[in-house]
Structure formats: structure tokens, C-alpha cells
Amino acid sequence: MDSILIRELRVEVLIGIHKRERHVPQIVSIDLDIGLPGTAVFASDKVSDTIDYEQVALRIRDIASSGHFKLVETFAERIAQLIVGDFGAPWVRVSAAKIGILGNARLVGVSIERRKP
Image 1 (cartoon, rainbow, N blue to C red):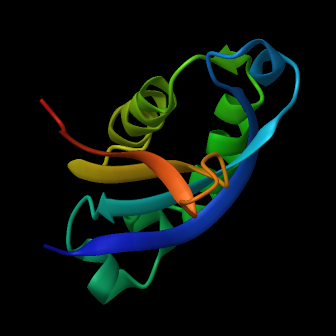
Image 2 (image 1 turned 180 degrees about the vertical axis):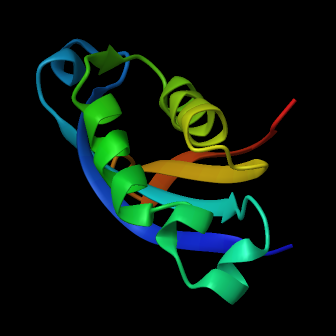
Image 3 (image 1 turned 180 degrees about the horizontal axis):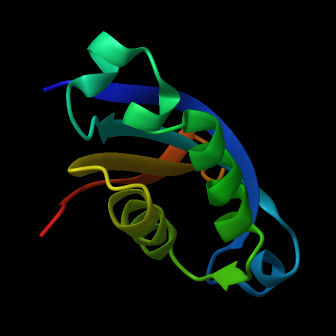
């Protein structure tokens, strides 16, 4: 399967269930595998025939700044809905992880996959 890769996109987001996490933004690292919407881009060399990864990153930053998320799972789901729904990807794999949240782990997060219905 052909895909666009974005690795270690970092965004600040209010995320977590603890009181301090409602007021102090945390860095979340995001990895994306985004299914290409077709093969036309290989012949056309036009961004209009694919998914503009710059626009994806900007829209994810918008989601991150839209309010407080209790769970990383919810944040990842919103990103997946955006990419499949608004950008027309046939499928997406979203991994989102808080950095340094546990003393003995570099990151803690989730990985989800969604497909266009």
C-alpha cells in the first residue's frame, strides 16, 4: 500500500486526566501513515492528486489547540477522522504519544488505524 509518512510531528496540547494537565500543555509526538487517495499523483506530479502533508500538519495543530482532551485515544481518533474525512485518505494509522510522562519510559501513547467506510 502506498502511503505518506509523517514522523515525530510534535504538538503542544492540553491532555490528561490530572488537574495540572488541564492547565499545562504537554508535547505529544505523532506518527502518521496516510494511505494515498489514488495513483494519479505518480504521473501528474501535482499536489492536487495527493494529500498535502503541510495542510495535514496545520490542521492537526488546530485540533491540538482546540481544547482539552482527557485521553490520548480521543486525540488520536480526532486526527484519524480528520485525515479520512476531510482529506479523503482511504486509510490512516495514527500513533500519538505523550513524551516523558512516565519516569522510566520515553513515551506512552496509542496507535490506531481507521479506514474510509
